[in-house]
Length: 72
Image 1 (cartoon, rainbow, N blue to C red):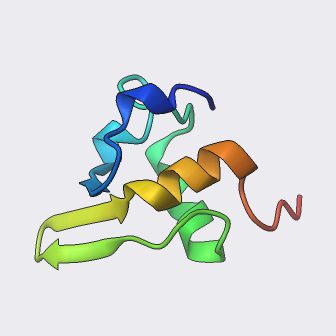
Image 2: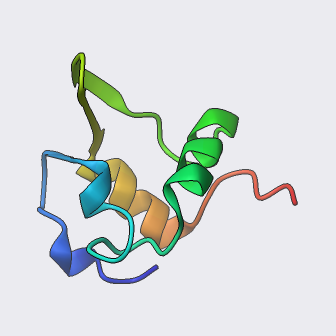
C-alpha cells in the first residue's frame, strides 16, 4: 500500500479509486467489504442509493498507518 499520489488532496473517492489495479490498495472487493464490516477499514458515506464514497483523508490515513485491529 503506497501510491497516495494518485489520490486527490481532499474530497471523496469511489471504491475503484481505492482498490488495485487502479488504486493503491492491493486487495479484493470482498476483502475490503469484510474489513469495513469488522472495523479494520474506514466506513463509507452514502451519497445516494447507488453512490458509495470514502473520505480521502481516511484512505490516506489507512495507507500511512495500516488497518486497525489486525486480529488474525
